[in-house]
Amino acid sequence: MIDDLIEIHDKFSVEIKLGFNARKKQEISDFKVNTWIFIPNSLDINRHTYDKSDFYRDLKSNIRLITPSYLLRDIAARDKAPFVLLEKSFEALASEPTRTRASDYEYHIRMFVSIVKSALRDEINHIIDNSTDDDIEYLTDIYIENVTSIAENYRQLRRNINVSSVSKELMNYYSFGDEFLSNLIEQHTFKLLAGLEKQSEFTETIGLKLMERITTEVSYKKSKGYPVVEKDSADRNRDLVFRLSLLKKYVESELFLTTNKRRDGIWIEQVYLSIAAGLSMIFATAMAFSFQQKFGNFTMPFFVALVVSYMLKDRIKELTRYYFAHRLGRRFFDHRTNITLNDHKIGWSKESMDFITQDQAPSEVNAIRNRSAILEADNRNNREKIILYRRLVRLNRKSLDECSQYATNGINDIIRFNVSNFVQKMDNPVVPLFIPGEDGNLAIVKGEKIYYINLILQFKNEEQSEYKRFRIVLNRKGISEIETFTV
Image (cartoon, rainbow, N blue to C red):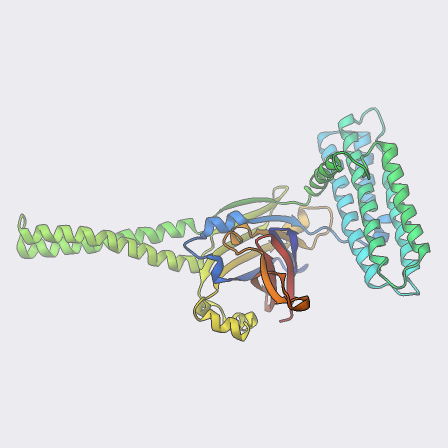
C-alpha cells in the first residue's frame, strides 16, 4: 500500500511524500512509482538543455521510518507502551549510566516526542473534520486533558534522572525533549484553535479553554528559560526560528534512515561495453585477414583495408555501445540506494530519469493528461516534453521489525523537487490587458502570466495499480498552487 501527499514546500519547491506500508505477514514487499512530468515546450527543458545530473540536482530525497501510530489517549496513559518504554529507559540510566543505556535513553526521548507530534496532528485533524454541536466541546476537553497528562508525565520523569550519576550532558537530552514537547503542544493547540474558529459550532468557551492551555505552556517555557515568541522582537524572532529548526532535526533524526547511493547495473554495463569492443575488433580483424589473404602483405589494397577497418572499428564500437546503453537504460536504473538502520538492512530503492516521447507514454497516461482542444492543436507543433521518473522500492518486513522497539508500518520517502531551472525562460509574470474605461477612456488591468506543469503518478503494489494527476501552477515568481484532478 502506498500513501501520497503533494504540497508546496516553498516558492520554488514541491514536496511529495510517499508512504510505503509493508505487509505485516509478507516477508518482502515491492512498490513501484512512475511519475510522468509534462513540461510546456516554451520552457526549453529537453534532453539537450536538462540532463540527468540537472534533474538529480533539483531532486532531494529523505527516507525515514513511518512514525509509530498511537492514539493521543494511549500516549497519555502511564501504563501503555510509549510511556512505559520511556520510563524504563530513565530508570535504567539512573541506576547504571553506561554508554548503551545512555544511547537507549536518548533514543526513547526522541521517539516519544516524535510519536506525540504525529498523534497531535491526527487528533487535531479528527476534531476539526468531525466536530458537531454535540461533541466539539467534549473532544476539545479530552484533547486538553490528554496533552496536559502527557506533559505532566514527561516532566515528572526528571526526578528519576536527577541523581549524581547522570551527567549534565545527559540531562540536556531530557531538556531538549521537554522544550520540543512544549513547542508541540503550543503550536498544535494554536492550529486547533484556528481550525475550530472557522466552524459554526465554535463557541467562546471552547476558545477560552484552548487559549488557557496555550498560556499555561508559554508560562512554563518562560519559567524554564526556553525561548518564546516575542511580539516586538528586534531580530524578528530569528534566533527562535533557528532553534526550532535545530530541535526538529535533533528529535526527528532518530527516524531518518541511513542511505548509501551508488550507480545501478555497473557490472552489467561493463559486460555490454566489453561486448561492443569485441564486436568491433572482430570486424576489423576479419577485414584485415580477408584482404591479406587475397592481396598479400605490403600491398596498397591491404594498406587501404587496414585504414578503413580501423576507421569503421571505432564507429562500430561507439554505435554498439550506444545500442547497448539504450537497452541497458530500459532494464536498469540510474541509482540504487541501500536503506539501513542500526546495521539492519531494511531494503533498497532504485530510481531512474529519462526523457520520452508521447508515443512512448502508455495510452492510459496520455488519456489522463486530457489536453484541451486548443492545447492538443498546439501540441502538434510545440510538443510537450515528457520526463519519466521511475522509482522502485523493496522492504523486508523482518528487518523492519528488528530495527526498532516500536512497531512501524514502513518508510516515508519525502521528495522535494526544485523548479528553479524551469522558470529561467519564462515571460514576465504580469501582462497588461486593455479594457474600455469610464467616460470612454482606455483602461489597463494587470493579467497574470502562468504556466502549467502536469504530474501523473502511477502507484503499483502487488496486483494493485492507481493513477493520480496533479498540476503545478507557476510563473517567474514561483509556485502559486497545486491543483488535484480526479482520475
